[in-house]
Amino acid sequence: MTDTTSKPKFFDKILGVDSSDKNSMQSKEVVSYSIAGLGQNIICQLVTTFFMYYLTTACGIDDSGIMYLAYMFLFARLFDAFNDPIMGTIVDRTKSKWGKMRPYLLFSPIPIAIFTVLLFTTLPGDVSQTAKLAYSTVIYLLWGIAYTSVDVPYWGLASSMTSDTNKRNTMLTVARLFCTVGSGLVSVVIPIITGALDPDPSILRTAYLIIAIVSVLIAVPPFFLGFKNTKERFFEANKEKESLKDNIKLLFKNKPILLMIAIGVVGSLRTIYMTTALYYASVNLGNTSLAAAMFMLVVPGGLVATLLTPYLSKKFGKRNVFLWSHVIGGILLIALFFMGYDAKYGAFTGTTGLAQIMFYIIIIIAGVPTGFSNILTYSMIGDSIDYLEDKTGKRAEGICYAMQTLISKIGMALTAFVTLLVLGKAGYATVTAGGSLDPTSYDIDVISNVMSNIWLVTTLACGISMAACAIPLLFYKFNEKEQAEAVARVAARKAAAQASTDFVEATVAVDEQNEAKPIEEAIAECIAEDVNVEEAKDAPAPQEETPAKTPKPRAKKKKEE
Image 1 (cartoon, rainbow, N blue to C red):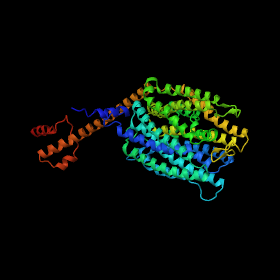
Image 2: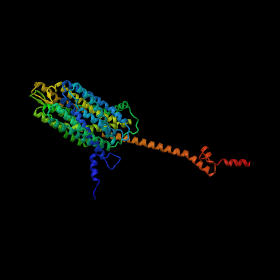
Image 3: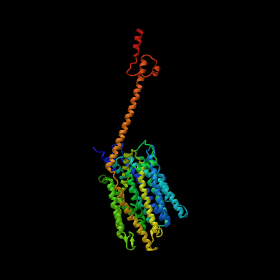
Image 4: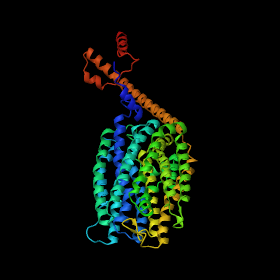
C-alpha cells in the first residue's frame, strides 16, 4: 500500500509545521507569508539601494545638492523610524475580523506602489535643483509612511502565527530566503540594465521609471496572497487598548529588545557596502555593471547562513551565532581596507588587482553575518515578546516589532547620511559624469580623494560597525531555555485563569438554579391542591427544612380545646 503521508511530512519538516494539528501553523501559511516578503523586498531594495544613486547620477544634482540629500535622507529615515512605535501602537489597537495585522497586507500595498513610482518620476520641464530636491523630499517622506504601514504588521505577524520559537525560527528562515531572492533580483538586474545604457541622465531617468513600474507590478500581488492565506493565533483579543505612552513604558521593561535596539544603532553601518557598491563600481572601477557582481557575491554567504541558522542557533544559541559571526566578519573587512593601498594614487582606493580579488572574497564572507542577523533579529525580537508577556502579562507585538523596523531604518538613515556626506565633501559630482569617472578632466589628487573616501566607508567603517555589534550582545542573557520557561509560565497562568473563570461561571449557574427551585416546587404544589397559581407566585419561597403543611395540626388542636 502506498504511503500518501510521506510527502506532506517531508514538507512539514522543511517548513517547520505539523499539518496533523489543524489548529497550528500550516505549510500554506509559511509559503504565503514568505512570498509576501519577496514582494516587500523588491520594493524595499529598489528604493533603499537605487533611489539615492538615481538622484546623484541621473538628476543633475551638484555637490551642494548631495550635501542637502545627506541630511534629507537622515531626517526622513529618522522621522520614518520614530513613526514605527506609532504604527506599532496603531497595530496593537487594531480590531477587525481579519485580526490586527493582516488587514495592513490588504490595504497598504497600493499606496506604496504609487509613491514608489512617483519617487522615480522627475518633474516636467527644466525645473531648478531646489524644486527637484523639494519634490523628492516630500514624496520620500510619504513613501516612508506608507511603507511603515505594512512593514511593522508584516513582521509582527510572525509572532501571532506561532509561539514556538523553533517553528518561528524556521518560518523566518524560509521567509528570509524569499526576501533574499526578491532583493537579490533587484540588486543584480538593475545595475546590468543601467550599466548597458548610455550614461546620459535623461536616458537613465527613463530607464529607472520603467524599472519602478515593472517592480511594483511584480511586488504588490504577493502581499494579497500573504493576507489571504495566513492566520493570527496568538494575540490578546479583548485586551485594553494601550496608548503610545503606555507602550513606550512597556519597551523599557523589555530588556532583550532594548539590547537589540543597541545592536541596531552600533551596527548601523555594517551593510554600508551594499549602498556604496554602486559608487565603488562606477568610480573606482569605472564600470557600474560590476555592482551586479558585488551584490550577487553577497548572496552565497547570506544563503548559507540562512540555511544554517535553525541548526546553529539550536546547537550554539542565537546570541552566540550572532555575536561571533559579526566579530569575524568585522575583522575581515577592517583587514580588507589595508589591502586597498594603490601606489598610483598614493592612497587606499581599492583599485589594485589584489584589492579587487580580496574584496570579492571577503564580501562573500561578509554576507554570512548579514544572513544570520536577517533572521536572528526577528526571531530574538519574537522571543522578547514572550519575555514581556511573562514579566507584565502583555505581549505588545505591534510596538515590539516596530523596534525591528526602527532598527532597520536607523541603519538605512545613517548609511545614506555617511555615504552622501562623504561623497559631497569629497567632490563626487565634480569628478563624475552620469556616474562614471572622467579621469582625464581633473587633478589626480581630487580623483584619489573621491576614491579613497568611497573605499574607506565600504570597508573600514563597515568592519568597525559590524564588529561593534558584539558589545550589546555580551549583555544579552535571555536564551532559548529561558524563553521556553517563560512561554510555559504564561501558558500555566492562562490555564489557571481560565479554570478559575470556568469555576466561577459554574458556581453562578448552580446558585441561580437553586434559587429558582423552591418557586417551581411551590407552583407544583399549588396546582396539586387547586390553589390559585398567581397567589402562590406572590407568596414567599418556602424553606426546604420546614414542611409546607405544618400549621394545620396546630389549628386542629385549638379547635378540639
